[in-house]
Amino acid sequence: MKISVNGTERDVADGLTIAQLIQQLNLKTDRIATERNLSVVPKAKYAETTLVEGDKLEIVTFVGGG
Amino acid sequence: MTATASELDTPLKVGDYTFTSRLLVGTGKYATFELMRECLAASGTECVTVAVRRVKLDGPAEENLLSFVDESKYKILPNTAGCFSAEDAIRTAHLSREALNTPLVKLEVLADPKTLLPEPVGTLEACDKLVKEGFTVLVYTSDDPIMARRLADLGVASVMPAGSPIGSGQGVLNPNNIRIILETVRDEFKLPVIVDAGVGTASDVSIAMELGADGVLLNTGIAHAKDPLRMAVAMKAAIEAGRMAYLAGRIPRKLYANASSPMEGRIASAKEGIPGE
Image 1: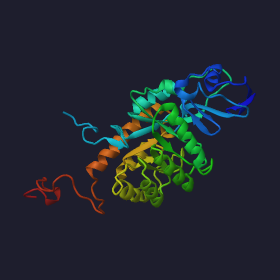
Image 2: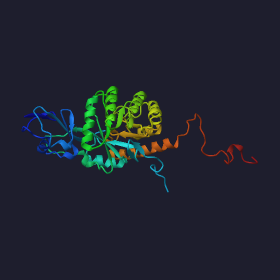
Image 3: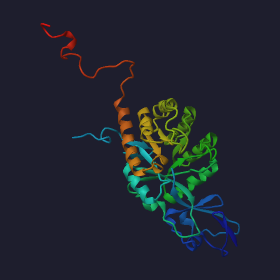
Image 4: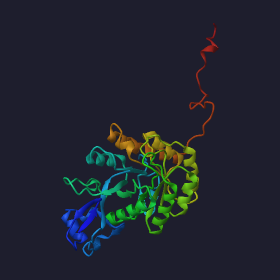
């Protein structure tokens, strides 16, 4: 199925969870946050959140800023 | 014993947080993370701002900014910089709260990329929502005293008027507006006023503090100085100098001179001449 991650379309396996996606992307969960279709997904729910076709994800961290 | 600034002052309180240093420093625009770390230490700050951005998913792994910010020394203040609507600022605040487990947010709702001036209607809307959701909101605003009062009335933790546009280095352009903001926000609402943005050099920081501001937040003034480390040292001295001068109370301005040395006991003027001549 196709989902969007940070503005780029990705082909991922059906039934993929956010936890599995984060693992595939080699991200550490301690300094990131994830938004799915404009709502934040708490880290505790990554494992139980199953993605569906067309989901739009934003995965963010921190950069220098004023 | 020599008195130090911190002994002669009370700490800065923002919501439930207490800071000995009244300088808040941004982490953007440094040539390297190492230089940023040195500058933060030299500035004496205890609160640093960071921005929320997408993780890079392609290309080589990059070092994370937060690896260079010792969270036992610095309170992290995530901002909503780059947000041009209340909705995007609120989403960004939600993301930073989830990532850092902090209620702190420096709220910026900007009007356009050229001026980076705050968009007042969106700022009020986002501020109201985030305060109601339990965020500790430090809100970036223009130096408009009425807007500052409206924001204070919403229950923010701090109002942060801009001295001048972000990154412009123009200093405090309208000290009288800052004075009026201090009379309402600081004196009536009992909230800290932190002058945010526009600082070009150390004297700008001192001027803001001499006006009675509770703190100053700056980034570019240090990061883009020719020698950022020396400027960080200068900013630390400037914030203490300005704060101490404010607490000490300046002398009134007078039109004419007022001698510091006594007139009494001076030697005779040569014009009086030598005896017998």
